[in-house]
Length: 404
Image (cartoon, rainbow, N blue to C red; front, side, top):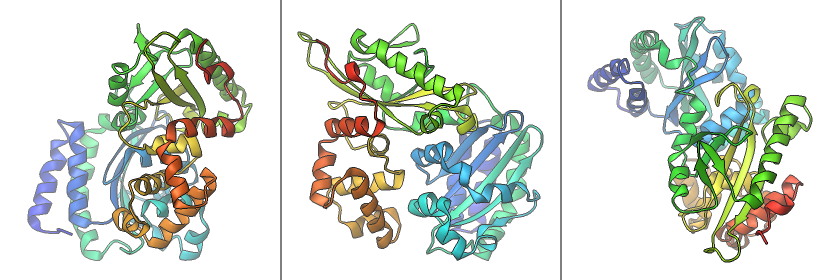
């Protein structure tokens, strides 16, 4: 920790920099994290008119964690309701409300928070009015214990400045088509990702996806529409339309909730330069993502191009095998040859936590030993597609075979 006066003065100066630059909030959070320590610092906001998560930024937080929270775990987070009932001048300490017996049996803690190395929360509301609610959350590891009194005193001194800057820059936190929180998260992912309408209109392509367009002819953007080879285009759009129908009609609960991934395997036509591209896509439903990706259903399309992929990406592991983000990180480090004890040290979690995650990985990938798992991961593209097709139950027929 660094609770010096110099660190406090630095934090205050950074806070008021945010009035001219929305992106400066990350500098603020990193400064606060350096001061008080712990697992992570998170600043998030909900738009008052739409009830949508309109802002999310953090220090020491991977974007995949935000996406996992948005898509699933925000709906079972027992802390949110408590936090919204607090006054603006109060701090919420989760250990005062959730005892160890509750934590040991609660799916939010056991499936999301603890596997990501967090346990304790200290949080407060910076703003609450008809336009937005802005929250500051400080997360600490199980071994860290609750927020120490001297660190809390440091935060309490900063809070009036944080509240003043948040109120003065409130437009930064309300719903904006130009600054959707989901779009900002996707843009930080290293995996190539596109967001599309169900008719194929491109809404967002992150930097990795834009680079991919120069590496393959199997996906192109023409007049702001994503264009696939003719052999795959129609079936892909039909699957997207089917997913949207399920969302609007309530048919097919798993897919209507945006949890199921479908698979796409494209290959170049005979006579053309050999090329192959793997895709995994799902429907983002506004009601299930708090409007974070907009107020209409969108298709999220992940790509895996073997010649350009430099590492195993946790998003692909999630799509193919249903691994959580934490399990994906463990699997990736195993594939790099790192022993379990070193993985625990690298991730800042208990050795037993990593062992439990490995057991879950074995079950989800139908493997039994580390060498078997590593072999599977090193041959990820073909194995992932086959596995995802089996799990989905819709073999995609003409989408999975090279055109004749």
